[in-house]
Image (tube, rainbow, N blue to C red):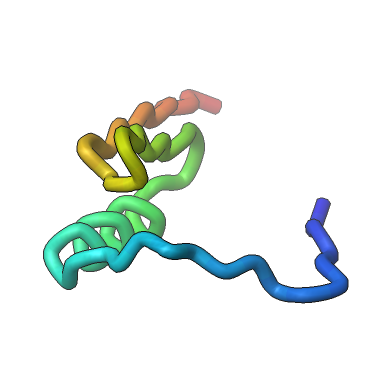
Length: 56
């Protein structure tokens, strides 16, 4: 399912290269699960990665 926007959303928060690199790595490496950003006062303060391992 994809989300379509009339206009792309903008973000006021500037993400540091360190956070961006970690987020990109988590998204690239995960097969099943979720990545959650915890934001406080407009700043990313925590990244949570919950990975599911499926046995077939």
